[in-house]
Length: 193
Length: 193
DNA sequence: TGAATTTCTTAAACTAGTTCAATTTTTAGG
DNA sequence: CCTAAAAATTGAACTAGTTTAAGAAATTCA
Image (cartoon, rainbow over all chains, first blue to last red; front, side, top):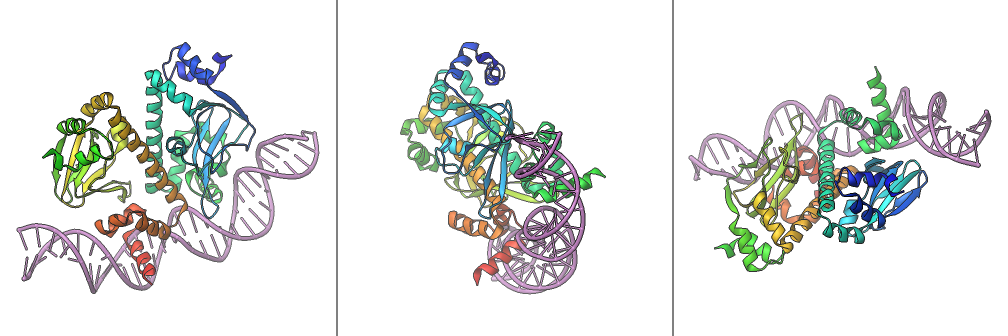
């Protein structure tokens, strides 16, 4: 059964673990099923797991003082999703992580994972790269936001993540792009002609 | 002489290294002096060092397609400054790192540093925390930017970094806050009354 | 010290993106 | 398959922040 898990595939291919090492990691994991709109994490909670999407789709977002949602991360099967801020600092999160379809996630508890990272350099290297990638993605997104106008951000988003555009409703994509759904709608109608 | 270096102090106190371990790190380092407006890093270069400000002040920024500057990091003596994106990925940077006063920096070459990280867990832990902090700071800044209006960002900045406000010209602070110098000037005049 | 350069301010015209409100279209899931 | 709920669209009024321009103040360093 383990072999059917997408995470098993990820660890044996992308991470380069042996099948037995991968099996050991998976043995420590929990599986969680979520219905559409259910939450995996909510403000005030602490993120104590690394989370891998087996199938389905999720997003992380936070709500500012004026009540506006800002989507920070989108993810579908085969992606990791988390609030690394809370995971790394062990402070309470300000974020929601929510399933946008019915979704299955594998959870690796931080405490157990850290033991395994000490024992398995390959795994450790894999996660180091993941953290770096997360930093890089965040920086890229931040620069993008500061220096690019909404329309360009939208076309760039479509090119970079064509699979995401079909998978998430537009109001979520708008919130990821940092604009209102109404304004995205306007952009789209201009784009068409 | 080594004992006079601010980095020596940082390593023996904040990082908790022994004096001899700290001395070994320092022995691998270079010192660089910069005049006001001189660059430590420019687009296209690769960031191959960790950089510690001995004294003076620096900022990192990038220039978008329309030619606007966006300041990402400010730093004064006792702070690290770098483009971690380029340092971690070993790709060319998009950023400038510039001295805003005459400044002395200690440079730790990545290749040598990584050997030392392997040998010295205390040092390794110190840098792990630094990377995490950088991620956290970036995330905080990004959220802030998305959800807070300029005036609030400004007052928050003043509270969080009172030492920086006096140290950098306003047009740099404006660019750090993500607004034009003219608009910051307006905000300040409202704030006064 | 003093001239040249850099930085800051003010104000008016402007624009990218928001808000509000009402209508239409699409989708979820019993 | 049907209906309630969710999502997308349209347009008009609005606002936070930009642009341009020009003068005033502050700072640098020869």
